[in-house]
Amino acid sequence: MARPAPVMVVVYDGLQVWNGFLFPLILTQSSDRAVLPLALTLYRGQFGIDVPATVAAVVLSALPILAVFVLARRQLIAGLTAGFSK
Image (cartoon, rainbow, N blue to C red):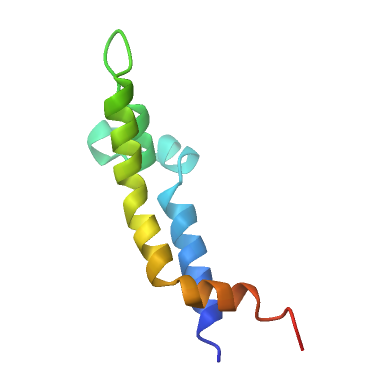
């Protein structure tokens, strides 16, 4: 009965860490240790941005979070609606 709430907290916290940008931007000094959202901003050329390659990289970076959502969908919905009715 208490399983959906911790699963929901883990998924939302994981999503927050996965999409973190400002904290890693401040703390990382080299581009080889950059997290995924920070690396996506560095994924550009000297004179322009390759839009199809950037869109493909963004879609590929969203796949793991989408897979976690699909696998934990039932627990997420149960955790969100746990206190809704008596």
